[in-house]
Length: 304
Image (cartoon, rainbow, N blue to C red; front, side, top):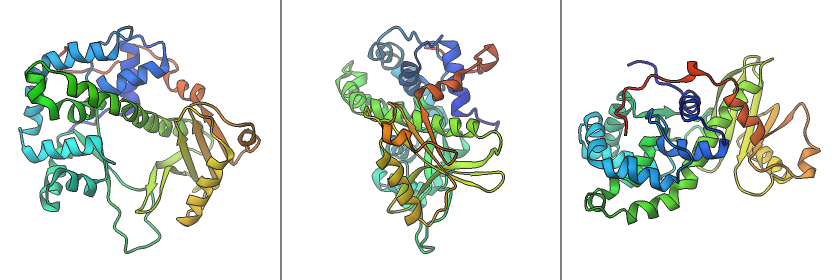
């Protein structure tokens, strides 16, 4: 199977193709339509575009996706569970009501088909006997939107009733965007350590705790970080909590990174140093520097 484009590559292509001028708006629309190569008019309301491009073409899009999933009920149940859950493999098995054996076989197929990618915790938990479930991520934002907010409501969509889809979207929209921010922040961290480049990056989790960002540089230095996406400013307590999580997991971090979508308190700004780096939304926007036609991905999906 050919190498799948990264989320950043998909996002840059989406923004170039659709002349995105507003970064936050671009993420909101990309979280729904990302990965499909469709032209999207970002000046129109998202709900309106979903109705026009997705719901009215449900039968055709469903047919295209069913060719990939082979219309397998276990695959569909698992994809829907992953789309709304915590993305942990074993949690998805329970939510989907499938056995571990069935689930693992389904995941193997879905990874090979290019719908999902597997993510492992960057470090093993302190308790060596603890089994930490891998996480599974959709390779395209649209597929997560489809299996969370469209596919489960096929009967009402078929009848021209979109109320359930609208309600689900209202509840899920923020979560769609938040995951995109989380993944793009990892890309920002990779680009921000040029002198001692990042060798590996991801997240850490065990049964009790989770650290948003955990990376290792080429020289062997560890970086731990947190992502704050709420409307309030990040405070010094965010740094203290991050350090405490690292201590509990016996993870030694030389550098701490905090990304905040809405800025930082003065107290936290005073902590900024070589070992404490603060990234804001303006830093994330640098991921779209030098957009050009070279960023446009070749896409063979049908256009709607």
